[in-house]
Length: 242
Ligand code: PGA
Image (tube, rainbow, N blue to C red; front, side, top):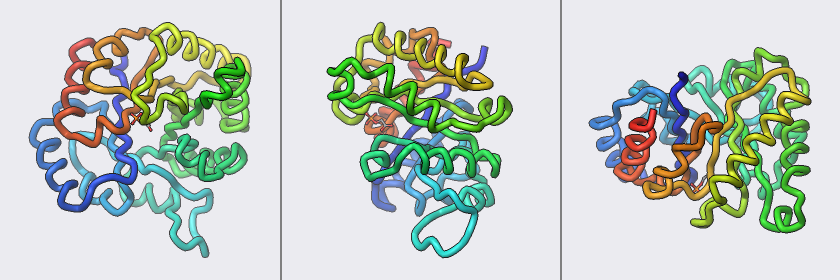
């Protein structure tokens, strides 16, 4: 059995001093190998070469050129970064559309960076019973043109937008149904089946229930992963379930 992925999305949090304190706790205590931490770009060098892998929270879709302020998958790869989060709802809200997301996904895979591909419906879409339609569209457009080998390097993170950073959590049945739906869409429209993760308001309390979801291959954790002790607790609970 493959261990569940445990991914920390630290987003735009922590000062340099806070990062040092975070790493001290993490590096002294971290014991498992299926953890990926995605810090802000400027802190990435501090996180490299430990017992966990490092992901980048965003990349551009070209390898180099006049794109001030951007970081490319080629550059990320050359630093030892193994994963990139693409399509996160924070970035979709900033205007990233499916076309840009698809270009970023492809450029990452070309450079052998694995993709943590985020999808999810807004509350409004959910209330209008459009969840399935939205997930299907995001999967088909975002992962368009990938072959089965490339898809084996994609992790889809189902993150309902209304559950991200809100302390609102879907029921386990709702999560499980959406994961099954995503798997069905992948097998119908793609040439392979990526791993499927859940993300959105995970904490050290609700993980005890979420960890039992059989069809979920891992978790993407935002807020709670910014506190090293809370994140370690979450890891411990997931690991003990395996
Ligand atoms: P959250 O964020 O755990 O704070 O809800 C999840 C994410 O944004 O990936």
